[in-house]
Image (cartoon, rainbow, N blue to C red):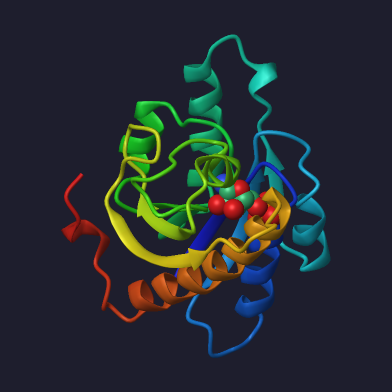
Length: 195
Ligand code: GRF
């Protein structure tokens, strides 16, 4: 299974996936890493000798123009699946439609709880004792796509956003790995999910 992974930040989840993909028994390869900015996480692509590309939103007059360029860069690699892993931009509908159903996102909450860019902070602010991690198919909404895999993660007393996010990311990484294995094995069929 061939992947392109998009990031915007530190890319710790990307790094975990790159490390796992180095093992011959992992049924997927990361062909390239893309970002909307000069993300710190691109260093992981360099380290693992994976090509990368950046398509800065600020370089384009409209989000649609940005989306067209991003889509063009992605499609050059002809991936089976595109994984958004800490990618913090909304993709234009044209991009989602072009890539669906091979377009996944990992989210650090038990969707539909706490969608959006501040899920972990929102969970802490809400005072919940439990949150989670989710892998979803991306649709044209914000974190509204069908859930492919999710798992509860406890919130511990004294958790900061960082300690909770680290605990959630550990689960996100395992869920993403399991989903990728499931797709590669034909156990998970993305085209069967309603979008
Ligand atoms: C992950 O929790 C991802 O789900 C969320 O942002 C975080 C990215 O972390 N959108 P990293 O960049 O992989 O370290």
